[in-house]
Image (cartoon, rainbow, N blue to C red; front, side, top):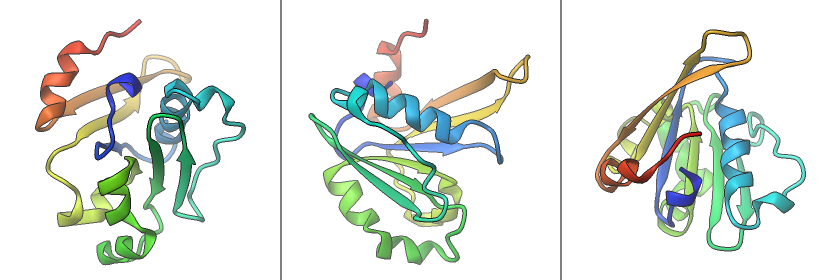
Length: 137
């Protein structure tokens, strides 16, 4: 999926606490060109956003768990991220109507073992077509 993402794409990461949203974001970032050089990828739980300037496109990683109101996302620069970067958004439901209609939804849930997860992917707009080209190993 990381190879299919382009500037202006939004990847909405759904799931409860401990579902693996940040782990997904780490894997996504490291799979992007230049991402292998990223050191630590912390959860932006307290900072709310981390920006990674990667080779082909910047990636903004949002964790909106602590967002009080959807309008507060404007102060985080979310409009700039939507226009100029790839946006990974944990707790996207906190955006309400600000969540773009065109996006990839990744819903994470517990898998058959404690360390595994199930991911349900739902593409909206261009992502619906791009999902056809995604392969899983």
